[in-house]
Every structure is written in structure tokens, then in C-alpha cells.
Image (cartoon, rainbow, N blue to C red; front, side, top):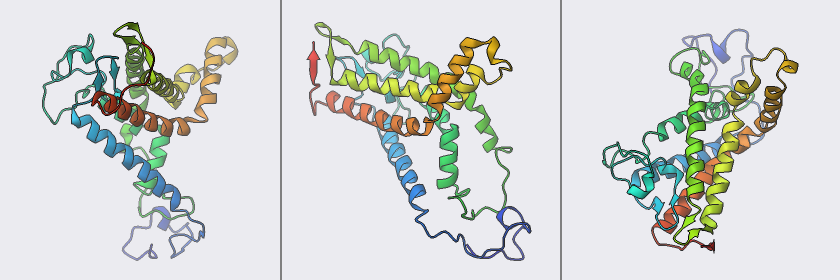
Length: 273
């Protein structure tokens, strides 16, 4: 980054009170590694999830009731009736509309407004800043007080919807224990159950959930149950970043496995039924 010029507004990192350093940073370590890896991880998930959401095939294994989370709830008129379960098929069957278009936008907004993801893509995508002690390319900083970033404050509301969708994913995982002979159990069940457990862990460890449990309590001693809940959620919250990344991986793994079985590429490894 070049030194501030006369026509540049004296704000942000170029304000008179800041050190006048021409270099972008004096750091000598590989500070670009973390943001690059983060961007690659985000890109991998976004590309995979987008392609799969619009493929509109190989999302359901009728024999074992495996439904990928990318298509749940399946409420399009193009959905296999068995995959919809009791959900009404209300969305038109067109190529540009995902079968789970009612839930996917809310899940995207829940993650997009997540406190961890905000910090991650603020640094890596917007470079605000890219790393500690690295000057950012923006002359101004308004925080989350103006449009569009003020919409980040809606995160708590998307949390409630995400929790509801996690209930639906739980239902899908339970239904998948049915097989042609009755109760059934296979590798697909393991993947679905592990995925939904991790999704719940990520959702419950959310900062908004922590606030709902005990954020406004003035006297913990008068609310022992809520205090206990707040304490347990706080423990999970310390690893919220880890769960955020793990669930991106398990979502892709779950969908990929269901796709392989549904397409006949592989057979489900069955233990019972």
C-alpha cells in the first residue's frame, strides 16, 4: 500500500493520529497464509453447495429414506413424493429454484451473520483488515452501523429459524432408520446422525443462543436452571469457530454420500436391515 496522498481522506488508518508508515505492514511472517486458506475453504463449500442445490437429482435414497440436508425440507413440485414426507409441495419445478429454496436462504443468512463468519470474511474477503498490524485498503470504517452491514444485527432471528431447520434435519435422520424390512441401520445412518449432532452443536454454541439462555439475567442465583444452561453453552461457545468449519465439512460429506448411493455409484454399507 502506498503512502497517503493529499487527496486521500485523512480517516481510518491514514488519520493524523496514526503512524505514517508507507509499507502495508512491517510483519515478516507469512501473514497471508491464514486468509488465503480461509478463502479457499469458503470457496470450496460455496461452489459445491451451489452446484448440488441446482442439480435437482440424486438427493434421496428411497430404499433407506436417506435425504441430503441440502434438499430438506423438499417442498418443490419436482421432489420425489417420498422425499417430501408430509411437507406440501408448493414451489414450482423450475431449474433455477432449488428444491429446498424455503430453508436454504435462512441457513445461508444464519451463517453469513454468524459472529465467527463475520470476522472471517471481513478479514479475508473485505480485508478489513486482512491481518493484525496490516493496514487495510479502506479509508473509512463505519462498523455495522450502516446499510448493508447493519443487517448483521438480525443474526439472533435467523438463529431461531436455524434451530427449527435443525429439528427438521433431526426428523430426517430418525426417519432414515426405516428399511424395507423394518428397522435398518447402515453407514448412511451414521453419517446422517453425526451430521445432525454437529449441526446442533454449532447452532447451540451460537452467541445468540448463549444470550437467549442467560444474556439478560441480572441475578444468576435467582435463575439456577438458566444459569446452568448459560454455563454449558458458554463452554461450547469457546469452540464455535471449530464447529463452524466442521459442519461445513460434514454437510458436504453427508450430501456427497447420499448422492453416491442415490446415483447407484456405491451401495450403502448395511449393518442391520
